[in-house]
Length: 431
Image (tube, rainbow, N blue to C red; front, side):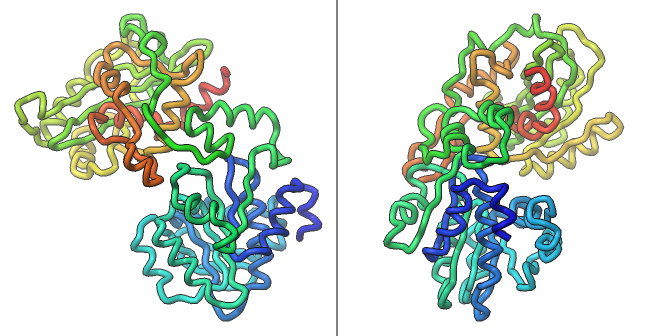
């Protein structure tokens, strides 16, 4: 298998595959698209062939969906691993068992500490962990203790996180004492990448996310979340808003005691298109003597706003999506009923906070920002300057924002990040 792969692998990838057998634990970390996953999967397949028969083989990720996308889809690709190997990887998306090279494999989603129960008391001969930095520390620690059969091994991949993250402090920095070997990769270590792709990836991240996902560094998230924000560059008059080629939709954050907000996002029809936060709506009990509104009343007020003019030169365009706070189950039902027949229905937004922040940060960054905000979006503007990383969480190795006065930002993040697959091609074609 390796003799065929050598034509497609860099020397560093091949070296990591060979050297991974030197220690019980082998970790691959670094930038996106650096080739670390392919190298680690080849090492894993080789390990499956010789894994002790007296213990379990497990594949672990944050969720069963991410395990399927990041592990089993590549393994089942004839283009990557050849038809002979791909045919011997049997897995149904969402299942908790698979077969790899004739061995039964347990598949585990470990997004919270409760997943520890899946492996507690087990004897594990071989483990493969995808996106290890996203797993609870208590699960990782238990997983390592389960490697109690002679010859047991653990292989894991990850993108770097905070310098204070438990993976770096307790494992990578103590590699020699915990029987671990660590391989650091950048995109230069992946010989299959074209320079145009590398350049495009570099444009996709900024700030702390650029340091981690492009440079492959373990970097703390500190200070302002959007330090690049500049009203002179990012705010435009509503009255002189460019024409739109698409109104991507509306992002809604929902609150009972907190504010309920809605942000409308458009894609300009300019020669070099930009995203525009066109308009906003919100209701906050704190601004109305603590008076809370029912879902029905919130929906009525939102729909009244929706029917108003959101562009100085109406062109008949209608919002494509309504991306709603995933936790707002009751409001989703209310809007589904109230918007019936309008062509607009509520979807659950992608609430991956860090990835959503990275999406917004990249759009705001640079000499020519790809996102601007109209002066009607006063709530969004008031929050963006105060949005900060949580210092206490950073000290503990976690990436969290201070959850105060962020309701307009959340609404904007919901619609922008959830629709990235739609608007990104429009912006890239003119880049």
